[in-house]
Image 1: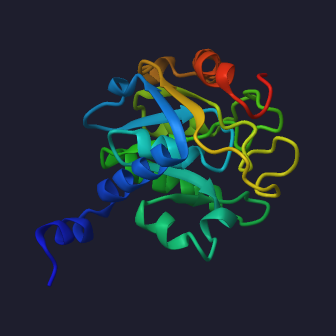
Image 2: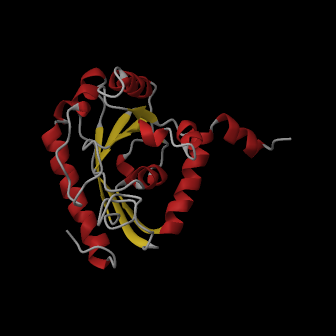
Length: 228
């Protein structure tokens, strides 16, 4: 027989999963957060962040005070070990139209449904993991999303995961043995930017600034990779 807590998890699993991820992330890293108050308590919004490692979504999703929907590559989404979790938290898979015609359109439609339902969606506008630890050019998909659903955009900068085995530092991600535990990881959120002002260049610049500030705390004390 399910308890009240058990029924709550069955009916609304995402807040519970978010809390469990939050505990896991804090066990793995020394996490410093700033600007969580910029994520609205209710209503739709988009969070954009630089993409460092395969742990990024877990760190950001666990840190957020609200459950996040997030776009992710379909091959990772379909992982036989983790697909159940990605489905449970409402991840949105996307593949290139070259490999799966219509995939991008379907993903954008799901993002639109989430935003119109008042949810928060997280994106990595670079579209791939950084190959060198730096922030790279943002792609055009974000502007397409905002043209359909003009919502506030919250920039975020993530630091401390470059050099981990889940990043592309010193070889492809996941191809090395884990060698860092309790590393310093900093996640800084900026003020929401109104949709009419949320151009790619401005958001990319804001993310670069936040990432640089996060570097100042995380990478200065890192025992892993050299600071970039």
